[in-house]
Image 1 (cartoon, rainbow, N blue to C red):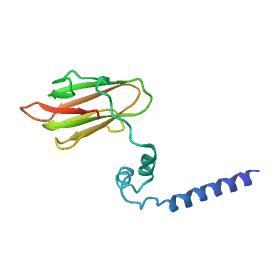
Image 2: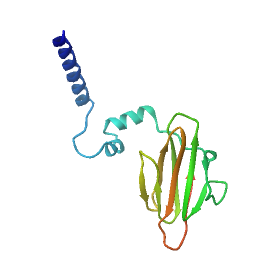
Image 3: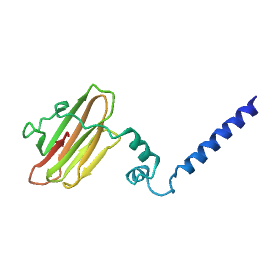
Image 4: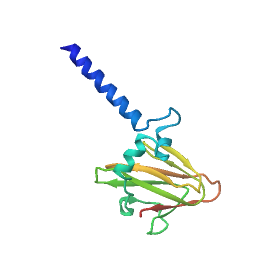
Length: 149
């Protein structure tokens, strides 16, 4: 009986291996994220089929450093609190307006430092997620815009 199970498991592994090769698996260089960006990896194909997660709604973000009601933030240091009742993944996207700032958030994005010309994206799930922003400028404050559309 165990010989039959071993043969079946071997055949399944062989079929999966051939399937990955036929679909154009990795060339062994770079990360899964790089392959996703190049649409060459399996993560890229899965993202194409599932679609990107939607952006966090502005009213789901507690913004103690809000400069106005449209999502503009002005800070030297600030903690945003994102609350979600939805079980899906949402993306909190911050677009720098001025200054260089550091974003500290839970995985998968983790501790990220972005220069002002780059957007910062943080994945948030169900419940409460805290996102810390720290301005890297010595004298001035930073500004960032929450992108929600």
